[in-house]
Image 1 (tube, rainbow, N blue to C red):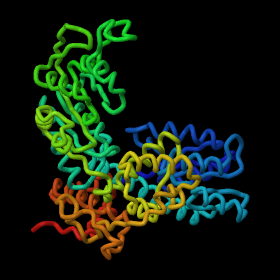
Image 2: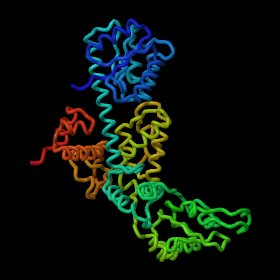
Image 3: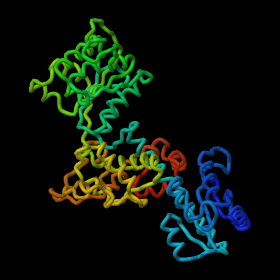
Image 4: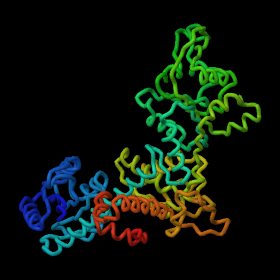
Length: 487
């Protein structure tokens, strides 16, 4: 039999707290008590870190009074929702006013009982609250698995092009081969470069970044290769450049399309011979550097126009990784949004979710700034939104006023993930009806379930344990997705 959940009783009357604790203890729950909200928050924080022993670990439910010293019940609900979002809250109070009940429910309490509490009412309320806690915990576990399954470090995407990119990163990381990353601004080229470095034998060495587009042309060579004292006005001492700083590691050169002709010539030599001279110096320096370069403009066109050296282009275009624009992989928006909600929720202490209407609005926008723009939109919404759920009105006007839409895969379109069969389909102008973006998460979840079932020879109990969900939830999802054991 599974171990019963942990419950925290919060009441400044020790007689009431002990009475509730005794009853719930007889029901088989592990119970602790606190005299006010402040003490309760301390216990919640400590319990979150506790693991291993029977009866230890995070609380599933808080049963709290309202009128208490230091931190009352309403403030406790706010803090629990902010810092312990999967913990359910039941309010039990002797002041049974409709207004306080409504406020408690708005703040996130799952039930509201008045003293003296009837045993059956408390038993039923606790059972329902524990079920809610279990669902929230399982949903969070599945969301984390989705991000882990369809991501690589800080890069997230279930689109078939992203999956192929992950495979290419893994394949090229072990070598010293020069890599060229091709993608629009904001698509995450620097994260791809970092992923290559962290998976390479050089991961203990330095990862140095250098952006050609962020530095004045007159300083490009000096910044990359360093300079000798007296090389130019203001050079009052020797200065090592980025190339030397990356010795033994990886040098990521961004916006290589902005490199000057002289920088291109010097870079060609470094790539071929692993040697260079600092500006104003005759001394040759040898380095062991792995080069990863990126461009936000197709280099082949620049070569044809005579703006980029052809020999350098062929030298750096050994392995080419193309990053798709966000508008070409809009079905990844739910995964990206989930990642950013978690990230900025931790930074701000605000636990936020997003409405389906808001997700649809995000899917209709064309995202000229790509993933970086989406991240900024979510960060802004988390910071400014006062409600737990981010709605359409919390999005920038540019997103709200987007005129075009897209259709995501529907429930039955299971084949659209991973095989390149047209994941994103233009809708409004071509007569398509937009499908809610939340459905985009269903196929990745289905893939996780199928993989886990296959790995456990369709043993449902073992599969449920591996996925950290109960068997009932697994059975429901098997039925939902129509998963049948292969003959």
